[in-house]
Length: 337
Image (cartoon, rainbow, N blue to C red):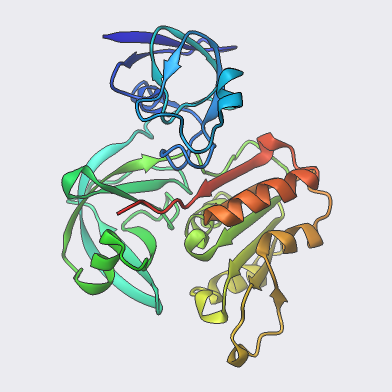
């Protein structure tokens, strides 16, 4: 059985099946609605059910409480339609050719760039290319229906291989394989591109781009895409890490800052080692952003990284005057094993 979903204030309508959530149904129809983690924990996909009823197969997701649900708010990455729906969401974009595909890929190269970080480069078969937006991610398809999500770190114009930055998580099923067993030539399967974390090219506002840990990966893709387009908007890049070795590609943003007048770069260490000889910024990276830019009302902000950083930054940036519709983020939720 299926139902109809209408997005308020638009002409967009799409069909949703009983066994799929609103985000998946919209994606199948060629629409991009706000979402990130797809597990109900980050809250990016939250919108309003104006008319109709939804339900959650596994109970109320973590990023929404009973009071919000009673007021008609919903997490559309988890919500199923019980009847026809009229919904309100923050942003709707036509996906065009940017639709998820299931594809095989071979590991073209593995580069060790920090003790717990690998750059992995994937090659698609033959002359295939994956259309994507800078900053989006892919899901590796594992046995037993498991998925592991990783952001694309290259720009769409530089797509001979797909670049991923993978951190080793203790006990992680996929990251353990990457660090212990994966060899060049290994065959993987993935679905992508996914997500609505990407450069908004129709804005002329200055940008702040903040990455935490391997959250630098999608920031790298966005910056390289902006430079390829000739974007002249000021871009202030912040990279937060614990210690200096965790800034595993530090020379790259330094090179951008030296070559392009519109780029500034500030690395921030939360717990530098005594032998780092670090004279740069210390503390939490989101606090450094606010220290440097106490009024964020005129900026677009892009951020990606671990949930504690994302959640703290959302509050701090709102307090600094950043409008909610100018904050774009990708929360790196760890998948349970």
